Image (cartoon, rainbow, N blue to C red; front, side, top):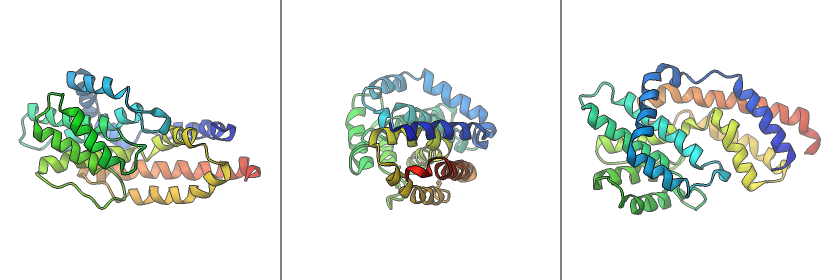
Length: 252
């Protein structure tokens, strides 16, 4: 990593540390705890996580650390979305396992062109050896195929299928908030290592993409809480841009 990026990463993390946790984690604290409990105690998830630890590369910002965060938030979203339903606790918990599995695998082909399509194909083959029904495998693959931002493809199928997909999408887009500036951006820069001037020239378009994400959340819970994640990210990004020009402008 270029020294300037290492310096900016430290500043960005200090900026992030001044922000409170997004309201999602406060208001939905019970569901957050339940999602984590399911994630840490369900054998099939631990088996899958162990396999993916060998498959996912953190050097591009979308490795196991990112996947676990998405899986946990997707599980929380599922629990909140189902809290008023007539479904049994057993069925809801199984849906959490399904969406957490999708979260773990959604970037399994992140470095490939059309990574969501390729990832869905790989996931379908991998899950053939796990204790999922054919319908559950289909739901996971559909969710992976439809998780990218700014893509025309939207999930279709039963309400349960669409909900799995929408929870995965929203949990993944939560990462475009503070996580983007504490971890993801710097992992990607460590991998691509662009010239500093090229990075700065692309910065405004990256901020514009963040702005557009605010209106893309799909679940009711995501639409309620997702925009705050993005607002935090925008505020962090704007402050970091000031640091770039004030303290590193001589490098441009």
